[in-house]
Image 1: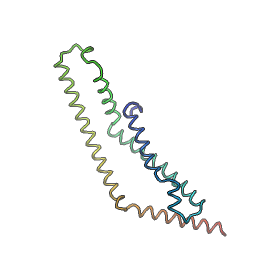
Image 2: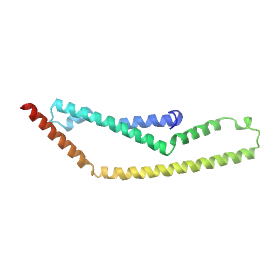
Image 3: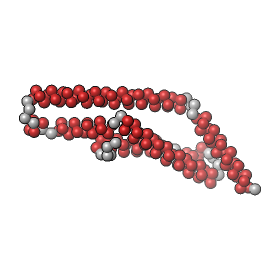
Image 4: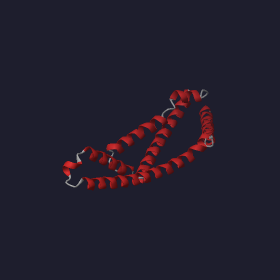
Length: 168
C-alpha cells in the first residue's frame, strides 16, 4: 500500500473517523439504561468490556478496510487519478512539441485505459457491496441478535455466580 498521502490518505482517515463514530454511538448512559438492575460496579465492568470489544472491532474493521484497499489496489488507482489531475492542470503544449492530434490520441488512450481500470475497480467494489449486503441482511432480520442475547445471559450468570462466591 502506498504511504498515506493524497487522496488515499484522506480516504483512509475519513474511513477511520466514520468507523469510530459508528462504533462509539452507544454511550455509557445508554448502557446504564439498558441494565438498570445491575449495580454501578457491574455496569462499570460491563462498560469496560464493551469498550474493549469496540476497540477490538474498530481495529478489525480498519484492518479489513486496508486489506480490501490493498486487494483492489485503490491507493495505486487514486495515485493515478491524482497524477492525472495534476497533469491536467499543467500546460501540456508548452512542454511537448508533438502535434495536437498526437496529444489527442494519447490522452484518449490514457482516458480509455483509466476507464477500464475504474470499471474493474467498480466491479470489485460492487461484488464487495453485494457480499456486505448478504452479511447485513441477516443482522437486519435479527438472526445474529440471539447470539448477543446468549452472551449477555452468560454474562449475567457469571456475574451472579461471582456475587455468590463473594457473598460466601
